[in-house]
Length: 280
Image (cartoon, rainbow, N blue to C red):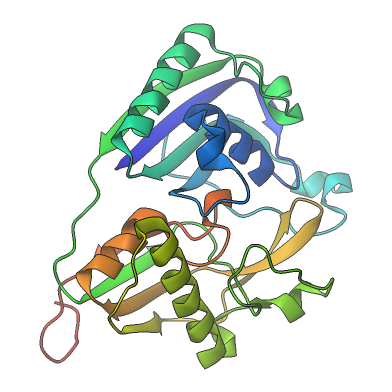
């Protein structure tokens, strides 16, 4: 299931260099279940967000992408200062009970306007929160063996084996993270990540092939501030050939690393191709 939430902040707040941390706090507040949001667990949810400046009055389609400023001097650069007034959160969950709990939390938030128990500077400055709308939708169900996706948050994948317990040496982001410019190494890491997460979430092995093809530019490399460091991601369209169960897994849980931290959220563009592999 997909839940779209749009909120308005009482006070416009300057966009911090690492806004993703504030959104992670918001998502944890909504889910309100440490067993699900625990950092050591493979996340059974995925999210992304879009931001609107105060001068839009929440109208129109102009939205800032879910990418944080990457310059070390951003906070001292007046030209880069942006005040945020409206936020749209897209949250993907498959557990109906958890989604029901999230809706209850939203109901409480709608009455109080406060994120009780959330210790985050951004939300403290924001004042009261007004919920403008909530929309609950069923996930699209793919029955074909090919689908085209578009990323709605950066796709992040590392060179290290997909293992949350692995100790990774401190290196430059360019030495840790992969993008489509790395060719087959990027594809192999994405597939390995999908297989690992599929097994741990569904408690069974995936037994089919997975082939990924980037559509369009491979060079949409993004440097993103995250916590005290930086990660490198990629944004764009891509086609996946796999069994429907894996394609539906991508729709529900996203793709790549750090999917519970606002990365790897995708939108299904098209799942119908003709026999030659061209989009209908």
